[in-house]
Image (tube, rainbow, N blue to C red; front, side):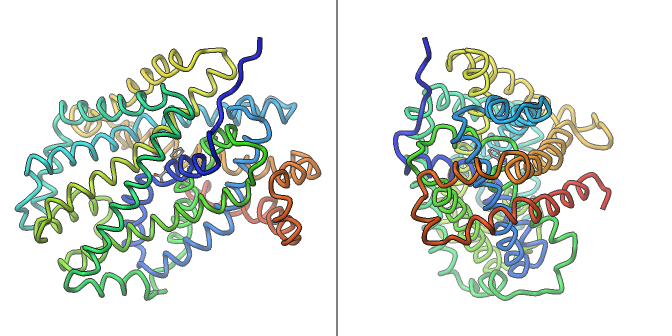
Length: 453
Ligand code: TRP
């Protein structure tokens, strides 16, 4: 008996779920602070170029592998390639999913914690970011606060994924993504109507090229990759539930568009408010949990905006986290014959446990250093800076060089016949980027992460 594999209910459902995976802490927490640290507009310009020349072509490749094989990363590579080497690339993706979700859930927990703290009123009346920073330190330094919200966040992730592709992931994305966009619109209106907002807008639109150096370009490249959830098979797995009637190209374009739009919108909402309060836009990772609470304290109605902001962050984190768990679950369901419920409980449970030392890295285990890094930092570094670029490199090389070009072009044209008729140059450019531009640039990012360049 062959089981019928799950699939998306509609193309729109797939786009929202995939955009949900892409839009995460990367867009709302990381993008604004790296843009802030690297000079604003000029950095954003470079980032957009990276999205176009690396992100978009690799996203198409990843979704295509999934849609063609209708399998998880391991099954997909074994269906397309004879060599074990490629199967292990799929396997590394599953491992990366395990690792990323374990620490992503810790930060996801903080966002839920901040929603609760706002409701309790503990995030008002800060006189300065330092005061907000002190509270942040005492919250994440508290074992039961950190572990408790990690547990709550993880329970929500498992609760969604256990309900399946259509009934869980697609349905929750259709509810959460519109809420996310609505909240952003409200925050932008609040931001741009504050006195002094124009300086924040100028920071985002007027480029200061003096801040751009090799390092800034590598950060933009790495982030283009991370923000689209590339390199570990999340987009591959989501693509595997996609119908062959739908175009991989236009779906990928819409995912890229939504991800980029939401990152820029988050930048506008945050920097108008930060500049209006006269605070430092280059505050680094603390921008969200330290600078912003101070900004909200000074704002009329700040508590409401603070609540909305952290809810936005929690939703963004949740829709990304479910795609991470789905990669692991799809592997055990497709390859090992597990049922979804068992796979979610057993492997979700194990990922949750792996997250515990990450949650404790901010309190009990803060001094337990491995190569000068906490457990959290080690897992984050290995997954985000090593496994993801490596996986992305392999995906570009695989579709560019290993999989036969005739088969690739045939597969990518399925459901996109008109597009290729209207724009016959598209396939040449896409292949050029996949074969040469992406592998070279991603290799540089990887070598940079490893401290070699
Ligand atoms: N794209 C997510 C973000 O912007 C982070 C991320 C990276 C991710 N790789 C992933 C999410 C893989 C899900 C799956 O925050």
